[in-house]
Amino acid sequence: MPFTPARLYTLGPEGTFSDKAAQRLKTYLRGMSAANPPAVVYTRTIPEVLSRAEADADALGVFPIENSDTGTVVSAQDSLVKHKVTITGEINVPVRFSLLANAPCEEVPAIYTQPVAYDQCSLYLAAHLPAAQVTFTHSNTDSGLQFLRAREGGPCAAIVPADFGAEHGEFLVREDIQNYENNTTRFLVVRAAPAAVDYDFGRLKCSILIEPEEDRPGLLYDLLSVFYKHRLNLCRLESRPAKVLPWTYVFFLDFNNNAHSADCLAELNNGGHKISVLGSYDRLES
Image (cartoon, rainbow, N blue to C red):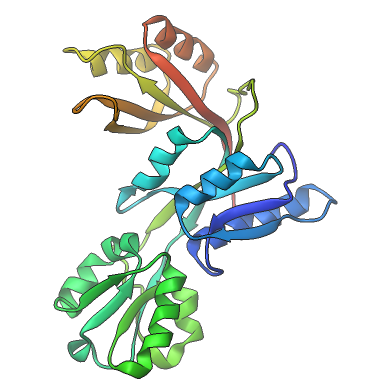
């Protein structure tokens, strides 16, 4: 990271997977500098993380961008375009979920869960709580807190992070209810974008946005052939509505940098497309 910020904005409350990513970053920054470590500031939504990071030059934002099971976090992807921020790093966090309940599953009429967690635990829920009425929450920790508040009113359940489940063992029904054992979420670290950015393509990865000049046959083939020509390995390709005209699209791409990254982007620019570099960055290892 290029500097030690005063604040880290991330989705709260304390104990979310976003918080885990922010705490890892805080520990890393503490080891890199003798200065005071940054304070973690919690927000209620992912777009708020980017909005506050954009407005605060002395801060970083930490938010989820994709999950190994459910894919892209759409609100985060769209917010990268709306806000003037640059990506400075990524963090991978293993994701494990537990089920809390105050009654046997067959007697539980309601469950609290964050929407993405619901999707990542869909197989278990279909098998054990198929008829439970779902109440969506702001975060995984919020699911647990709402369960604790509601449990006196009748049978209910919640999908919570594994450590939250361990702290409330008297209600723990099952650990590791996520669909896949190796469930992992990738988080991005961003800061307010300076007026001019000199990107270092010697970093591990680069993220860009391509806004095509027109929609035509062979467009995607032509775009991808430039990456093949420069031997750049694409890590991710995502199309999203352009939001200018219906049924027009922009493309988000992540690729592993090599010595030809700058030449590749220059060639794409010369093709008439609008290319925006969202960041060139490394991964924060465990």
